Image (cartoon, rainbow, N blue to C red; front, top):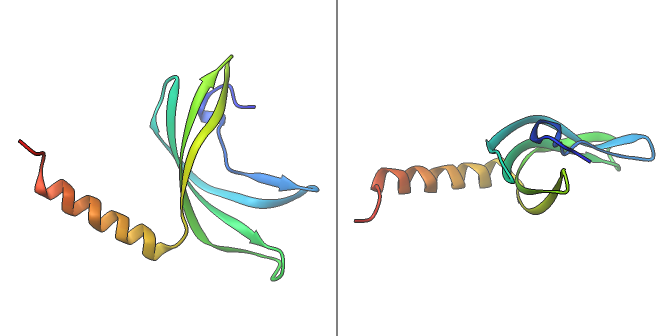
Length: 98
C-alpha cells in the first residue's frame, strides 16, 4: 500500500501481466485527503494491445499511515474529457456568483 501520495498509482497487474498502464499522474491536492488525476490505458485481452487513453480522478484518505481509495470518477473517452473541459472553461469565464 502507498504511504506517500507520490507512491499512488493505477498500474495494475494480473497473473504477472500488466492490465492497466499509467501514462501520467498529477497530484491536485495533498494531505489527509488527497486528489490525484491519472492518465492511463487498459489492456484489451482480445486484441492483445493497450486500448485508448482514459483519465481518472481519484480521492484517497490517509488512515493508519496508508492511502486508501475513497472514490473515483473515470473519464472514458477523449470526447467526454473535451466536454468536461468545455463546461469548466465556460463556468470559469462566468465567474463567481455574488
